[in-house]
Length: 339
Image 1 (cartoon, rainbow, N blue to C red):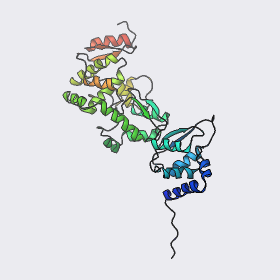
Image 2: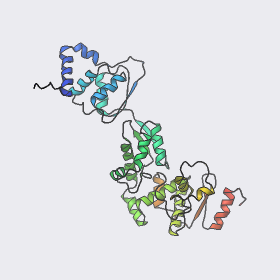
Image 3: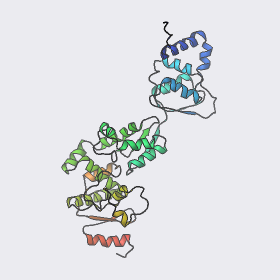
Image 4: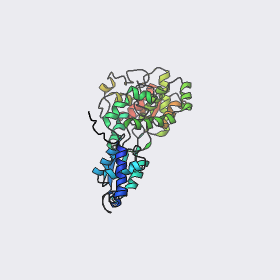
């Protein structure tokens, strides 16, 4: 039986095309190596996804009107020895840009960079929505990975969730990064901030890293004025030592699905594990992603005897050492009384 002819491997085919263009038709190469478009036209933006072959990349560039010839692009990639090393990302190409400049950008990964600031106190779901709105992640995919056990193990995160460990900061991201790769950057930033010194301090307090992060997330959600963070931390530490419920409204809100508006008495009686009015001690895990200042406050509370605080409706709080004083201030600030 006669064997059917086999198709030459891609590099061989592309190299043959390259040689034909150079040797048999230099003018053809000159035409093929020019990109599409003329000066004054809008730039073309092309998204190259991870693990894209050079064949797919050539197709994406051709479909976007960036190159004239897929074969010329592939031949150039083979000739330069970079057909396996073209980088994913989002690229912007001006009309008329030479083919070799297109190649260099893809080889070096010189794509568009998106600067994204994740605010302190954002919950993981809010981060997913923020990144999704900027077209950097698939929201549902990001959310599904927050509690993925394999992801937690790979990123060396203690606990059951990435909540609390997606460090709020400004990141320079490119499209094409996977959701897990972005999470990794954020967790690595957290690990830089919560290093050996902070871990040693946590042990001095008799707390685990997840407990400190959980406490820091409460401080982050309660504090509106930076200088109050150590005072709020002191209240929580004092209550934990006395085995008093923390009675933190943000924990109740976190435990309620689709919460909107103000907390009601019914909300405060909900049996959620995050209801710190009904349950003693810290909630099961962080309720937000705290910044550096709140982590420091959790580790170094101010020395005080305060056990209560109430909002003064101007971003600050009134602190009290006993319930009678606290009740007076609640009437003054929350119920419109004369104090």
